[in-house]
Amino acid sequence: MFIGEYSHNLDEKGRLAIPKKFRIDLSKGAVVTRGLDNCLFLYTKSEWEKLAAKLADLPFAQSNTRAFARLMLAGAMDVKLDKQGRIILPDYLRTFAGLNKETILAGLYNRLEIWDQKKWSEYTRQSEAESNEIAERMGELGV
Image 1: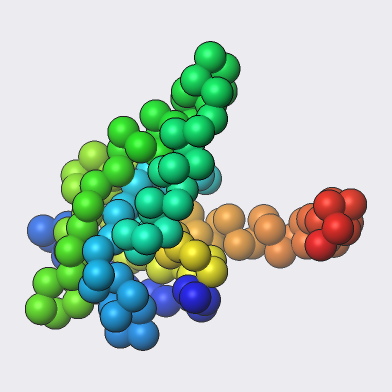
Image 2: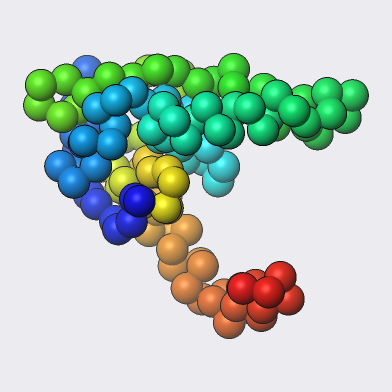
């Protein structure tokens, strides 16, 4: 389970250190892809396979499902941890997420999200300001 918020620097070669507590799970294989809200999603190989199977089962005749599958699947890249516990993020994914040197890795149960630090700060500020409204909407969903 991935939880917590971690600050790490992206180096000039696009390498990002993964928090030590997550390295064992990701050492068996990992996939990074375009996420939502202009961040990247990092999955263990097993979680990625579950998601990819669900995406493959979506009705391809609907334009929304095709677009979402393309976003997630076409942008995906297998990544491996190096000896220092880092992964290399491809240029196209760093550009998509607007990643600069300072990043945030946010644990969201079955995935990590990789954010530019400034974008993460803006996003969390906005979410915190709207927390009561968000809680009411979640209550309507039974959460």
